[in-house]
Length: 48
Image (cartoon, rainbow, N blue to C red):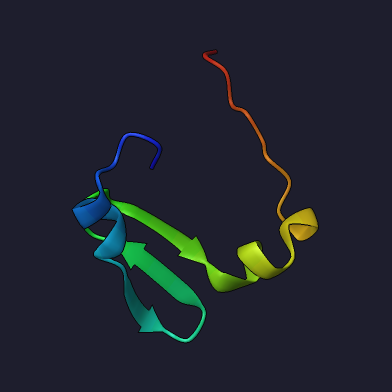
């Protein structure tokens, strides 16, 4: 999302109560992950 322009960032949809979606960036997030980030630790899956 860091490289997205204002128009891309402002085009956000909420298809369900707990789901945010930025179609121009193909990014979706759970609202719960914003409210309680500690419940969603970052995990890296490096190349095998």
